Length: 182
Image 1: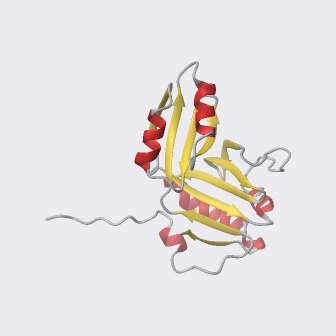
Image 2 (image 1 turned 90 degrees about the vertical axis):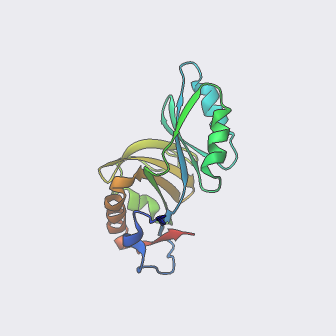
């Protein structure tokens, strides 16, 4: 007898039933991003970084000098894996089920994130396109600035509920709303 399994997002209970119209300050949870951990072999670090930077529909997230995260919201896992296979000196593994991707945006985003991060997010210090591994709400995360007032956070799936709740608490004074990005 076949068993049909449905995909249920780890933050479903935190969001479902609480949907509202998005305020200027909004936390979006991306339902099915594709996330690969990419390791550059010794001597190939610059070539791997350049290939990831030039990829279409794949955002490169810096982790360390030889480690990156390749994130896509539009391409499938097979397409990203095919692209990564063609990069000489790169090893990779699909981490899509191990991470949750959240995007937070709005005019008060830096004030909200300042309650959760011990990093200066001023545009002169942490500009658009920059990313770094850091602690967010006491959890290891990768934070990227994707726009003037937009950041993406990648957090381990098992800690996503805790980070989500702390972000909502930090944003309560700024009327932060939440929802799935569909």
